[in-house]
Image 1 (tube, rainbow, N blue to C red):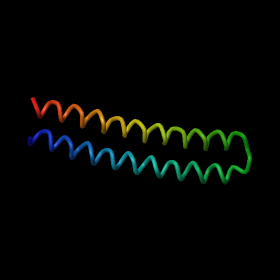
Image 2 (image 1 turned 120 degrees about the vertical axis):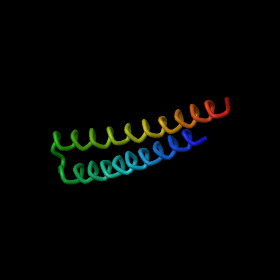
Image 3 (image 1 turned 60 degrees about the vertical axis):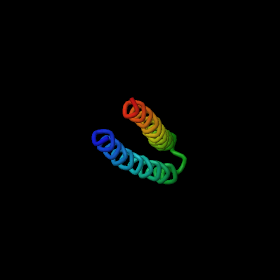
Image 4 (image 1 turned 120 degrees about the horizontal axis):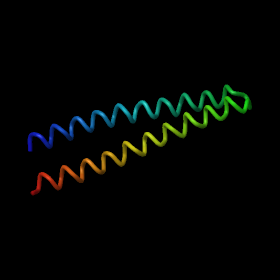
Length: 77
């Protein structure tokens, strides 16, 4: 149980860091969107920032689910 709990703690810390960075990037993308003032290149850059941050959040969520599934199956065997 030592290895599984250690891996779970490491994954949780990594997920919190990546999740925090993603939220910060969404906020930055929102500011870039507001500041762009309708400039098409600024708007598209801001939308890409927001899109990539949301994709990062989704990947972290799925990684958490996969790691929990793998750890629960390996520790029960």
